[in-house]
Length: 360
Image (cartoon, rainbow, N blue to C red; front, side, top):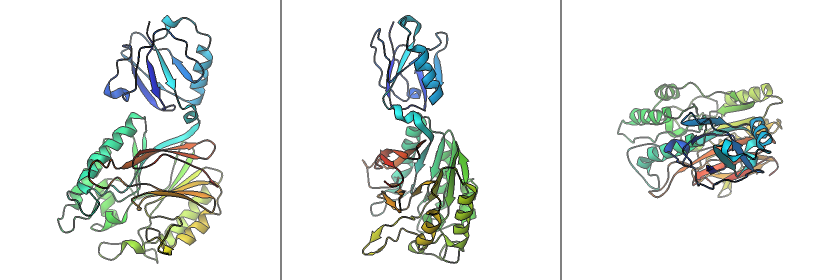
């Protein structure tokens, strides 16, 4: 009798395991498999019994399920009754409350300029989505700048539909934020209609409240419109700040994540606040700082990416999908919200893996 050993850090994910001793396919997330013969594997190894009459067996892990299996199989000595062994190399992943995918600044277009190879972005997006799907992710948040302005080629609607088509293939729900480049050609409502999605708003997933903000406004709160704004003069505005405060009050006692395309952190550039920040960042942070249940603020817009702690709260600016020519892989992440309130960022491409928590 042989065991299938899958060397993975995917506790809490869905795995497909073939019944034919280590024979892996594309749908099995390409695990590293080896025939190790009869063997006792306990401790950080999860033993699973696979039905012999089915080609494959789908198993969803949870903390309770894992503990039960480890307890039930701990005394099992008859290897012939087992069909596989799943090796868990990162046991802490089981303590996550919510896991979701994160992308930003796709800047899809048919051309390249400066360091932005927009024509490569759609392929990088598809690779990132494939990576997330293989890890069982079923929620994706797109932080904005899905397309790049066509600079007169009138293809922005086509670009938007192509991004929508790529994201439609993702096997789960996708939440969209608006970026400044998304509305250089379209009003917000028209852009969202092309994406076939609703206005960004707050939602709750697995007990975590997620607040989606729109920083594409003038100081008085009126919308950025094509031709009437500059990217470095963005504001949340009175309406969005009021919405933020109201949502935080309603989320009392629940863990909260705040998302915005533009940045709310405290980066300094040439002695001045970074132009990627909304102009009313201080007012926004004054609201946020009153609510200790906020776990982090997650942003896009600043393509290199960065993370920092401001007033004891972590701020993450995701690295962009758009980037230099090949072999630049782009960037994406899977965010694991842990039950202790920390965030584990599993990076892809240029996005580094990080662990974020309040007070650093």
